[in-house]
Length: 212
Image (cartoon, rainbow, N blue to C red; front, side):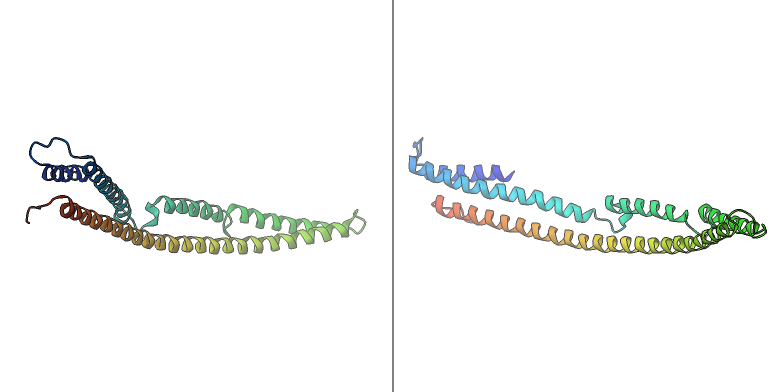
């Protein structure tokens, strides 16, 4: 029997107990009192039903909670991000195509510098070209260091992000569990209110309540 049906049965019993034999219609004052009582009970029942629904949902969240973040939506997104960033950074590894090309370009420009150095002083802009090539070779070396350093820094930053996300995820799990306790406590309060109101109706509306 639902809570609302219980309320109706209870009030019907109160009406039957209050009405004398052959008295078909309660007077207006009695009817107003019973309607008020019914409205109060109905509100308590509605509050309890809402509390039950909220508690069910909160407890279900904790019941189905998983510790492996990779199996959650947020965890899956961060896992995807990690895969993309790691894949991109792999393309900057010392043995990657880009770094191999950078090293090959530097080696070839060194050969170009030696070629200019073998040319006679009369070669147009010989010295300036040698200086430019030397600067380019220097830049290749600097770029190699900057790329490898930047790659390591990005890897460290990614680890920091994933660590922070993990800590936050675990804290949110604790908060979710705490919330489920709070909403279930509200359910208990609503249930207690219902019991109190039913007893109040039994004491006030029914002159001779049936003993337990």
